[in-house]
Amino acid sequence: MSLNRSEKEAVINDVTSLAAKAQTLVMAEYRGITVADMTKLRNEARSKGVSLSVLKNTLARRAVAGSPFEVVGDQMTGPLIYGFSEDAVAAAKVVADFAKTNDKLVIRGGAFGGKALDVEGVKQLANIPSKEVLLAQLLGLMQSPISRTARVLAALAEKRGGGEAAPADAPAEAQAA
Image (tube, rainbow, N blue to C red; front, side, top):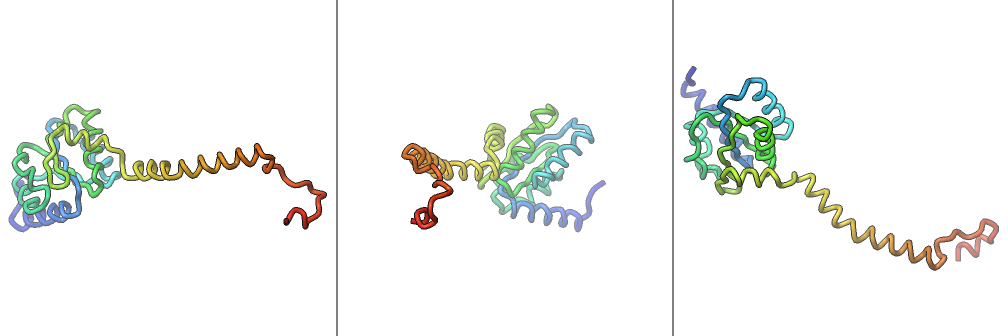
């Protein structure tokens, strides 16, 4: 069933708005994937904030024209599923993880930061930890020197005898001083 002109314009507008918000585009060939597997992929993508779309390649090319994803316009051939994500690694991670378990999904390429990515580039992007993991690692690095200093000071205080509490029967003035 073909789309009429107004439906094509609506698809192009939807994909253009996705591309405007996205940082990453990943393209994969989905030939031979069962409906159940495709549904599983779409559910996984939705939970990670990735928008997956099966589009006619001519509409996809028109939608990404003038965007940073225009660099992969020549790779848009064959039955492709397009994954857009605002998170820099989410689309690559979802598609690459699914491709590991399903050999029918073949990564074709992608784009990030206005640069075209080949299959290896998409896989490398997928191996980068997520934003939350990177923030947790940064916080751990920043907290590490402070916690080490606190442990050293506590050990010094305990060694010098400052770690003991004052006796309960000592006068309150002596404890305050």
